[in-house]
Structures are given as structure tokens and as C-alpha cells.
Image 1: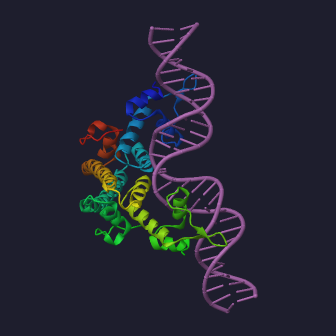
Image 2 (image 1 turned 45 degrees about the vertical axis):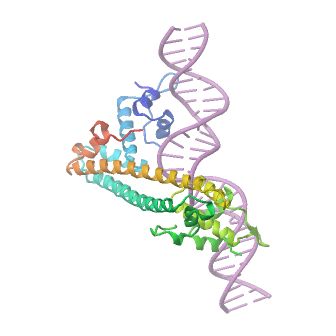
Image 3 (image 1 turned 90 degrees about the horizontal axis):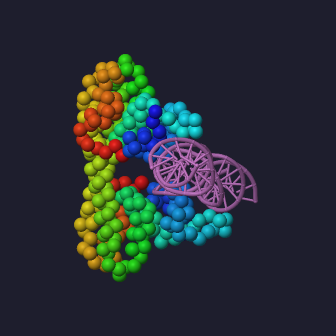
Length: 140
Length: 140
DNA sequence: CTTGAAGCTATAGCTGCTACAGGTATTCAA
DNA sequence: TTGAATACCTGTAGCAGCTATAGCTTCAAG
């Protein structure tokens, strides 16, 4: 049996986070000690590892719920799992692309700033007037 | 004089957002009509444009507060402005890099999934056991 | 048996909005 | 001028995914 602190040390997350996962029913309620403290099994530990690993890869809590429930049935076809992973990868790719556009524009602004007074600062000027942007990033 | 709806149309953000900016004192309180509706000046409009543009480049609200206050003084040296922009760009760069690591790992998992049963699914397997990750991404 | 760390519940806060609900103002056409 | 449609008002709660208190109880080591 493990305490909440054991699990926390083990997975690198905080005890509060584990309680939070229980509250949102991502982790099942564990047994309790005589004094009402949580007592976890190896199965809990494994599940928390799975969760934390998926979170570290950026999966949302809802994705993780789905992955956990899919992983319960060993004989199910894994295409649904695949779909969740691909969907997430595509979202990550899209995010990377939009951040790269953004960085380009930041680079341009910074590069154009000659270092004089704010009155002539290219950064402030561009922020004041979106037409000075070349990258065509959306305002909304 | 502009209504809140005029500003919203003009900047592509919602009226609720503009009220929110007022509430957190990012936008100053405008005058009111006889019937208590907000009435904005051109200065308000410009400020909101600045804010929305900076937000669209990913600056945080706190960064924007700083940029706005720096931009008030036309004769100040613009190195502080530069510093805010560089700090943000570095954060964006770091985020891009971590997302790229993450995508690599997702690609690897997806690539290894042969499409059979969940019991043999590489995606589930990797999520269950972080040691199967090659990219060395952090769990925490 | 004491003491200090760890655990408990409940609640509020973080970012940057968005979405109600339930009421009032304005505007435009008839 | 009236009436309908639209816009606006305040206040509050919600989203994700935690984190951080406060004020208490329990556990484990010495």
C-alpha cells in the first residue's frame, strides 16, 4: 500500500494534483487507513503513471479518459487509440506552425528596433499599427 | 464617440472582452451616455488596437501593461521595450522547441502502431511505460 | 510519548476570456 | 409617436488543469 506522498514522489506530481484527479474521477477512489488517509495499490500507481505520461505529451484530460477506457479492453482494435493520438499530433503541429509565424513577426520587430527613444521604437510603432505587420497574422 | 459595439467590430473582439479589460484596468473607464452606456474616444480605440495586436502576438496581459506604460513616455530609451519583446520571443522559441520534441515522440508512437489489437498497441504500451520513450521528454 | 512531517477537507485563485440571466437603452421603420 | 428589434447594462459563473492557502488530524521515528 502506498500513501499519496509515495505516489507523488513516484510520478513527480503533487499530492494536490492526485486528489484533484480523484475529484474529477480520473483516478478511482482508493482505500483509506483507519485514520482516513488514502492508501493506494499498484494498479493506482500504474494508472497515475499512464496519466502523467500522457499529460506530459500534452494530451488533454478528456483524451486521457478516452485512452484509458480504450486501453481497458485488450482485444479491441486499436484504431480508436490511433485516432486520438493522430488528432493530438495534428493539433500540436498546428500550434507549432502558428507559433513559428508569430516568432517570425517578433523577430522582425526586434530586428528593426534600432535602440533609440521610445518615440521612434519600431516595436511600439508596429504594435500601434497592425498594417506594419508583414506576416499577415490574424488579429482575432 | 463610439459605442462598445463599434469598438468590438473594429478590433474583432467581443464587447465582453472590452468590459473585461476595463475591469482589470487595462482599458480606462470611458464616459457614459445619459442612459449609462459606454462612450469611447479615438484614444480608447487606439489603445484597444494596441492591446489586441499585442495579444495576437501572444504577449501576456502583464507584458502589455508594461509595453503600454513604456510607450507613454516618447523620450524614454526603448531598451526596456526591447527587453519585453525579447523575453517573449525567447519564451515562444522555448515553447516551439518543447512542442517539437513532443511531436517527434508522438510521431514515433503513431508510426510504431501496427494497427492490431489494443493489447499489442504500441501507443498504449508507451504511455504505460515511460522507459519506452526515446526523446527524453520530462514527465513533470 | 512526543514531535514534526505528512495527510485531511474545503475553498479560492491563477490566465484570458466567454456565457449566461434578467433587466434597460437606443435606434429605426411604420 | 409608437413599437419592435437590437444593443447594452450588471453580476455571476464557467472553461482547463492545476496550485495554494487555512485550519485541522494522523502517522512514523526516536
